[in-house]
Length: 449
Image (cartoon, rainbow, N blue to C red; front, side, top):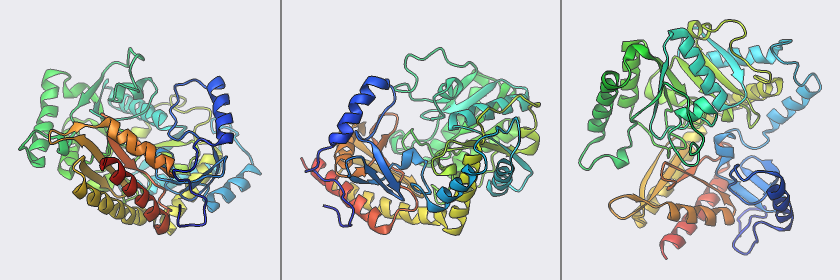
């Protein structure tokens, strides 16, 4: 059982419990099968890095609402600020009557995002909306049509965002036709590089492919933007080199192509810096933000160079609920937490602990082919044999056992064989170590069979 006073679940606990089973029946009757669920139970309370379900079982949350809760579940400062805002007004709609929190948050993001140039910010509801609007702005500013994304990239599930996304199942299969003038570029995956090829050699080859793309597919003069995740999220937590990211940026600079950084999952302290692009010494022209921006409230942002952001005319960008007062208030408090509690620095410490434990497991189990990460964005990749055949089934088995024992984990990767960690950055050392203990026990048991 658990080392704390919380009632953590273990192998003797039935999941789902009776209350969750009753809710599952209602869910099956009323909700379509499309939305995926990691754990077959329902939340009753969240606090920090802990989630308690309707049957009283408490879980250590290593998924963080897919990276949306860097500030944790129900941070008290955010909750109190939201209560105060609810007594003022809920949503007059910025397009009808403006409100100060919208402007205050825009000003703050303009200050803290990479680059000392003049910037402007506007708000939407989701990461996919931010991506779509960044593309709209890029096309409007450049007068060009083509958008380039990367293999294994994930940018959302709306039509254009889905077109930019790489993984076919479950994101794209059967949902075509897709948006035109969207093309995929190669992204480095050093673990799966051709045998004998160094990371430096792979970087050079992939950058040359981009240059050749302009000769074989679309001329550079027709490309509005390249959109890149600084670290691929759904693609398997694949981390590129600084040389590669800078090489892509230099190509953009040479040809007047805008560089869009998709920081929806990597932003707000997750990688050990406030924004992952800071690791690569690259200042993007546009940056998309969402997920952990507001402790779980639905809000997203596009921040960019002022002259680019001003390209659309009045009424050409926006949305009824974009930048809701509640989202803006929550985001301002989250940024305050990030700065005062030094959560990006905490992310670095968390990441070092997680990767150390994963490397320890890798030494014992050759099925763990790769361990990688940046800050607290950490993962292990499961494979079969020296040929690195992806082992989706093994990853799924480990995930199911961890979830059953009270540690919520999720998979990732083009082959669904990656186990990723996205715990809230407010997780205590005790909770982190207990969660890692569970992972280690499960991995030893499953791989020892």
